[in-house]
Image (cartoon, rainbow, N blue to C red; front, side, top):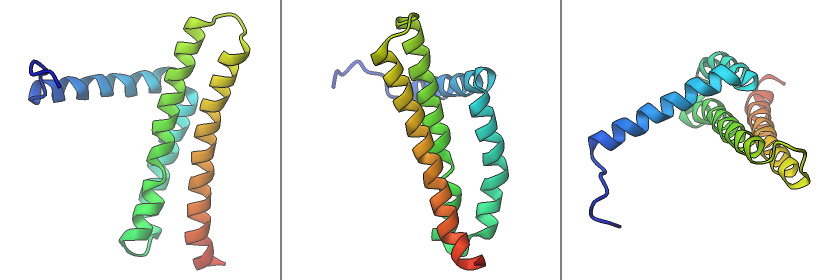
Length: 123
């Protein structure tokens, strides 16, 4: 690693600022991200309340954040693909579909975790 790489508090602060900028942009331009944030705000406290013990709470609440992370990555991928290939392109379309599929799979993961944990308790 080069010795001139700044890894101090200033770089950490810049990374935080860039991350917050990305979250603001996601909120501003992505309806799916806004919906997923609203669901997170509802389901996160519900998961912490409904979970019995630390592991259940962590699974119920922790399964939600990867959906948001994947949504941000998918949105970034779509923005780059749309910029580089404004015309229809089979490979570009495949990349966008696969990004969307990643978000979908994480949503299925949330559903499975919540059904396994809460389904066994309530049914």
